[in-house]
Image (tube, rainbow, N blue to C red; front, top):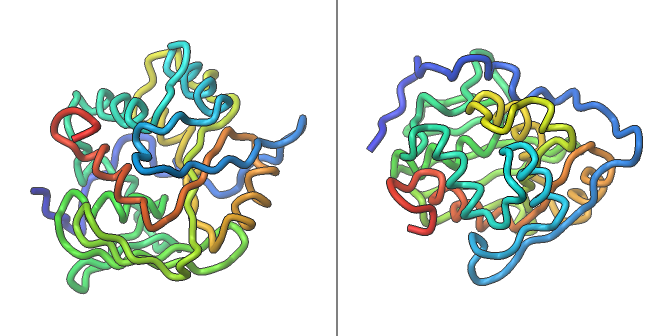
Length: 226
């Protein structure tokens, strides 16, 4: 079990990994997609997201969240992400997690969900949607997540030009730069769709209440489906 400390070390070159000043799409933005089902890890990702992830990783495609999690963990040596590998912020941000009265600010709100899975403690998560709406959650370990509003969703995605950032063997920092700007929380699906149609990325959204599913895959000691 990892225990967070207030002076956790950040991954090199990730301080700006979640820059919110995203470029506007010039040839049209992405396309809003919805992922739902009894086993989110094994549900096929949208084809544009499969292809964009594949190009970034130097393979034909990445078909599921389970495969995506495996690729991220491969970048950390095949094991779980560590607290020090989360995208910590040195200054206050709109994305934070409270653990036993201690606040951890992140470049990306989802790192607070991963923190709960890593530390197996309760984390109160706070973030702000691209439209300015406040979205909050309480993550209990890697199993339980309650959200406000109950209609909240979150997105996962990757820049359409992400392959230009790697030679098919990206570092963890490369992945942060290409992916983190498109991991957002929204008050509902309509808010996600309005955003997704404008950003130059391949994205998919799923209920925020199910966010711990992907977090468990990222923090698994062995296979992504465990």
